[in-house]
Length: 409
Image 1: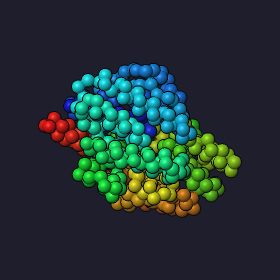
Image 2 (image 1 turned 135 degrees about the vertical axis):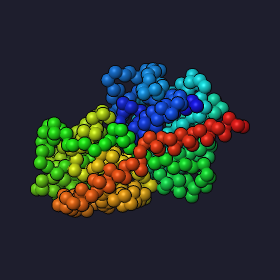
Image 3 (image 1 turned 30 degrees about the vertical axis):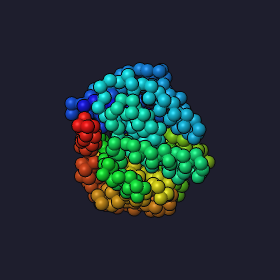
Image 4 (image 1 turned 180 degrees about the horizontal axis):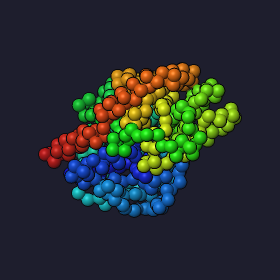
């Protein structure tokens, strides 16, 4: 089977969509299938083209057996709503122009968060007369409204109509959460076409290891209780809560490490500087191979999103990497993801945007080493339920079913 996958994020970018797509495609190639990915030049989140690449109309490479076609896009940083929309639209157009040159395709996948990529997948499916699958990673444009990037308007209503049209026109939907599936069913989408394949962790990379002593020394963290956040520093994450917690705990022997980039990073650095916080370290994104080393120096990790009804439907993928590394999770997200933390007892939940409660959770696990050790054991055991290779096979079965139904018509 030849799978054509459209995504605007792909390695060497290191965000969650890039990792999920690459790890799934890699497993499909191992299973004997041909996979072609159409994507843009790597530039997320700073809007700067990665070394070794150029923003050309067309370039090809092979990564772990995956055929990668990179097309021109309007490159911009992950900030500023209008510019990001131009980025999304340019990729949609370029992907639609590039796809006809990819021959022998059996099934097409278009992935969100933003659904202009899914628009491209739908158009390509019409041109190629092949089925397409909508991989639903986010309820967009609801997220736009939740973070305040746009308010209720004619433009939002038009995007919502387009969203529903794409759901109906897809041959199948692969949702990353059960909550998304319930929302779509409540909106009248046929539940039989919706399949849940959650996010997970590449257990070949994210495994327990001793603390990286060089990193501890480099950042002055020896002997410290290290609380870490690894991921995007955007509007949705509301990491001001972490900075407030660091301020409260400045007299304690606790250090906060924030690794990543995003639209809110500069303002977070300015906030920490204004408060004179010497217990907060900001680090830029690193390559995927380096990330486990930074996970290793954490005593606990933080996952956090704004307190919004929308985000109760989200499962942040970073929690699975933390579990794979045996790092207990302090989880500031309500809903389905919090239920996973409780079910597998891999850490503790706290109310989103409540810095006092976060402080209480940090000091509680720091003082109770037995409880901390129990969480670590549970993380390692529970991570096996979210093995990316097994989840990739689950999604592959959906693609095979869709392609098989189409070939029998």
